[in-house]
Length: 293
Image (cartoon, rainbow, N blue to C red):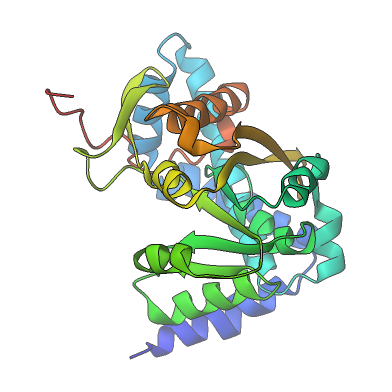
């Protein structure tokens, strides 16, 4: 049963906020960001531990700067996500562009289905909303339903309103087995901690033993999907540019783990270049590599 408090929060506060200009929302973001960092201290210990372990050669002052910059970006993203509930197509296209659409067009012209691997960098909500309007493919995104059914429906409707179809993880195999004449682009975010450390691909990432979900690689190999890396770069506050990079055109010809390794190196470089852009508040290293791996 939907709690009355959820409806009040969304319809009385969040949805009306979404109609405000982003400039006004950024005013609120600055206030909430200050409170989140200094008073609420949301996951400060997790963020600090992740940063210290990832950048052992950085000084304490450098770590603190990245930490503060991360929280500013993080709260900006929250308010941009609120804006995403009602943002119009013209405004969205103005704020999210693709740097190299010719790469996607090349694969489309070859008749190749695509898996796009990406991480939690910058604004992935604008990314998902704008993609269907900027590529020739039928677009899909893998997602895990929220435990709160009311907000899950809100998020689902928001993300899918421009043409992005959302696929639950448990429906992936039936989805890939479907016989369809349409060329597909499937976006998979793959920087969370894997649920099964025994089946994970392990490497050294940001100076730590890191396990990776191999789902994108296995799906690409089994169903003959080309794999491309796609990331969102912040051009300036509220404006983003998506750029794609080739990983593997024919995954069946690659060695086991090769696709995942290439993906992680591309992601790692982006994080090193702009550490405040990544989502540091998650416990990404909660699993340890099994001794026999």
